[in-house]
Every structure is written in C-alpha cells, then in structure tokens.
Length: 62
Image 1: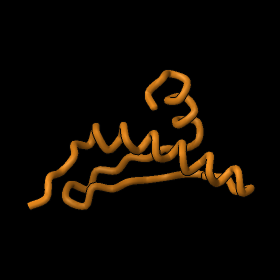
Image 2: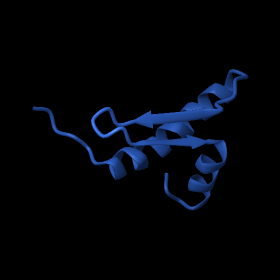
Image 3: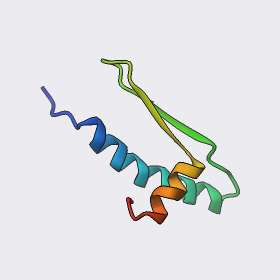
C-alpha cells in the first residue's frame, strides 16, 4: 500500500502548488480562478481561491 499524506500536508503543499500554477498562468495571460480538492474516501473538500493563496503567501506559509 502506498503511503498517504495527511490533509494538512496536502493543504500546505497545495498552497505552494496553487501559487506556482497561478504565476505560470499569469505569464501566459490566463487567470486561475478556483482550485478544489476532494478526498475520495471521506468526501472532505477544501479549496483555494486567489485571495486565500495571496494571504498564505503574505503570511509566509508557502
């Protein structure tokens, strides 16, 4: 069985990935609007929108 990361790990890593993806898209003239992740086992959902990513970057979470 492959190892699993905790939801907190996914959220932390996701903030960085969303910020990188947003930056890459902006270079090409696109805008990232919303990203959502769903845990298929529990049904738990969480996501990021541009303001959450910006707040995380300012607070040093990335």
